[in-house]
Image 1 (tube, each protein chain N blue to C red):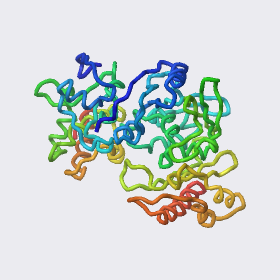
Image 2: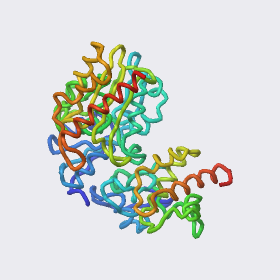
Image 3: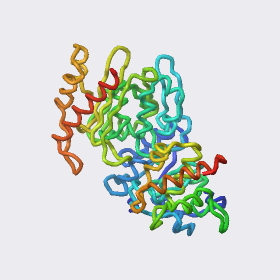
Image 4: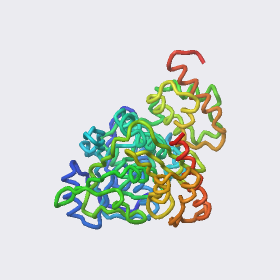
Amino acid sequence: MSVNGGAQDHDVEPRTLLVQYLRENCGLTGTKVGCDTSSCGACTVLADGESVKSCTMLAVQADGAAITTIEGLAPGAELHPVQQAFHEHHGLQCGYCTAGMVMAVVGFLDENPNPTEREVRLGIEGNLCRCTGYQNIVDAVLAAAAAKSGVSS
Amino acid sequence: MIPAGFDYVRAGSSEEAVALLAEYGDDAKLLAGGMSLLPLMKLRLAVPAVLVDVGRVEDLSYVRDGGDHVAIGALTCHRDLETSELLAAECGVLRSVAAEVGDNQVRHRGTIGGSVAHGDPASDLPAVLLALDATFVAQGPAGSRDIASDAFFEGFLETALAPDELLTEIRVPKTGAGGFAYEKFNRRAQDWAIVGALVTRVGDATNVALVNMGTTPLRARGVEAALVSGATASDAAALAADGTEPSGDLNASPEYREHLARVLVRRAIEAVSG
């Protein structure tokens, strides 16, 4: 499969989960294991541009797919506009949910570039954050959407 | 949690999937999106020896105009139902309920056929398909057969599909863009329904289905009959829990579920009538 634009090729057991493959075979530990039951969204990555929970997908199911993880969003020290918006709007505290939250938001804004606040809240319903109460995350998503469409926030 | 070990084979077509099922028999399970099966395997509640992955059988992913019905490929993901303009116009209830399944990530992977074949009474789509009198098309070694929705859901996670059959298509009637209401009660946004009530017009009839009120999705036939004979929404909805045997769990006792069914059915009838 392709991960963040580079080819990855490993022989794995069929039962290997995608998140385990990314972390242990590819060494990409930005993607977190949270609940491990497809509830919390901490393991969210993009598979062919769509957000998926990598704890509930087998690595063999992603064979041939283009996977994007948090490490692949922006080069070097640069931040992706969604990362920048989370930074500016304090959309995190402990940070454990953040990689998955950011990936879910990147996928969501691709599908819905100009969401309402209600749509943002529904768009991230698959991602749990136990610190922020979500308000700053919602602010960050709305700011990222505005920045993307060229409107000043 | 990592699932117990299994052998993995990938089917390139529905014919190949059926042949693989015939080869491996009861040891095999079909894998579509995996949104129901993989969590069960991680918990060791399902321990199949062989997974037959049909997730890449692309010719089973479609929403098509079938003349008097809409035909949906079994491997169509919830997201594609949610964004289908054909469904929005011709069977708006299914489009709308598909948008309530799980969350975005789940809707990208989960399929209508997987949800139906899993047969979970707490799922959204089995109940809406039961209310719509949908037809399920199953392909087996001897060919295809149609299964009516009221004969499909047989028990908790049990359906009329034989172990060597693959669900290939779901056919729903053209009910138009509106004429429905779905009341889903849950504690957290992404959760399964503690109880759900779906009311939809199908032709001249008003059909009522219940989510999570027993071991299968259910039709509230008593409510439907009362509506035919002119009962008010309140009087008809009072019958919603009759004959049901809902389970009790951390979220709700059986009595609470019965109460929810009556309240949610009343709200849904009022929404459709109003």
